[in-house]
Amino acid sequence: MILTKITSAVLTLTFGMGMNLADIDLAAKQAAEQVKASSKYLDFEPADFTSYDLTTFRGDKITVSVDGPNFCVDCDCSDDIILGLYDAEYFELITKTDIFTEGTFSVDFTDDMEEDVLYMINVSYVIEGVIIDAYSNYVILYDGDIEFFKTPNYDYNLESTKELWTDDASLLELTKPQNDVESDDPVVIGYSNDIVGNAKDDWEKVFRIYSFITTQMSYDDIQIEDDLTCYQDGAKCLIRRRIAICEGFANVFVALCRAQGIPAAVQFGIGCGTYESLIDVDELESTDSDHAWAAVCLDGEWYYLDPTFDIGSYYEGDSWDDGYIDEVNSGYAFYLLPLEAFSFDHKILDADTMHGVEETGSCGTNATYEISRDGTLTIYGSGEIKMPEGCNGFNKVVFDPDSNITCIGEDCFIDCDLITMVILPDTVTKIDDGAFYTCEDLEYVYIPEGVTYIGQEAFDFCDELAYIRVPDSCTEIGNWAFDDCGRLYISVPASLKDFNDNYYLDPMYVEVR
Image (tube, rainbow, N blue to C red; front, side):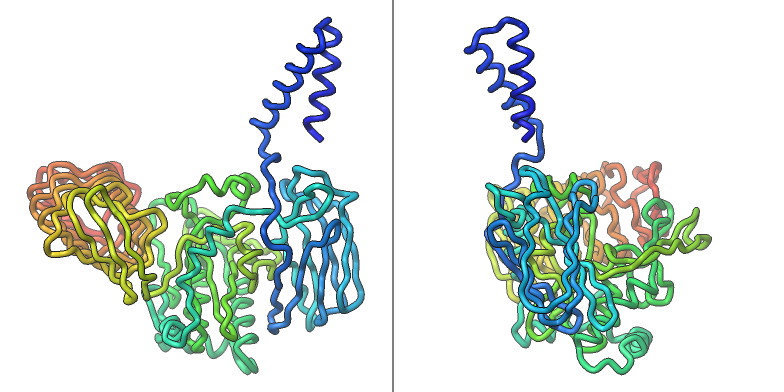
């Protein structure tokens, strides 16, 4: 243990300095407290659950569980299973065990584990010649027993996934087209039919669709570094180009599934691609959202999958139209995971569902909100408004006629991906910094006469935004307020003609009045 080593070192040092026992004890305690305060390894706690089911691409269940010093597997669908213990920080293999039998078995890894260290136990199995590596099984050694790691994501995700309902009306809704998910387009339908081919059921269809993305599409490393090009996220475009980033993969997967009548949804949140983000994810907020993936409903149960984490090639180079493909190994480590396993490295902030989760609450000192079943957000009251963090499951914004809202507050509607149009009331005089930041489906906003300030990054990355008229009353537009809006036609008063001097990606057209 780290504390034991440091305490021993302190004792050796302090005896050599001629200190008394009281001083030695105090020095040891101070050293221990310093280690405790600085070490990120000492906060690991066991999860509240001790088992969950991994689901194969055929729908079979493999139960993994912890029982005292043992990691247990119950499997009757494969007789070729390998368990590997990995250090989670450096992803180094510590030891592995080959199992060549079906049924229930357990392995004691505790001789190779230390407390206060995070590990992964990889469950590798073979079905119909397909090798599946399920890496998302994070464990710790706690009081001599193996326990699943208690990630703060899990309880959070239990709440954020409540919008994924399984009643007939909600599932039917999630087979319909949405922005960037053109599941009714003949091109998308044609591709979907070709990909699923003669698949015998929905399980096989979904597996073929996922395999198409991870083996036939490439992750666009160029786009990540490119601030000067407006990229498309629509499924129809990306199925043809076969180069995308995370949101594009999610849109393609969902569109291809919905074209087959299979309920699916795009999800947004935080992907823990590094060890540091994995253990510090509770400190990350909705403003740190950096990733997208998908969920699919099969036989009335929702499963989570991340094609980006399983992708098999990368598009490298200097520009979007002049790159090359770098091949790597694709996989199925993040395919059809249960919420328990998916939550280890994913914080789910919201899903693109057209229905709303009915709720009410405060969105300002003198303002309240209400979300209805059809996804309508109604704002009441007066003064400045700001929606609570993570509250973005609505597609329409309405202001009560008797309201007196004067300010759309900082980050008020950040990452509210479903809204397409907002009519601001005439009482609004200020749109604060980041008010509509990354509202990626937003196409039109009415800004009333009387607004004097549009804040920094207020509409940044609203890449579907088509038209904005900045009123004559506006005297200041903050830096990057309309940056990265490559489709935007914007009309501004002559006094603000230089609003975009330092933009990375200018609007499509600027009209100066």
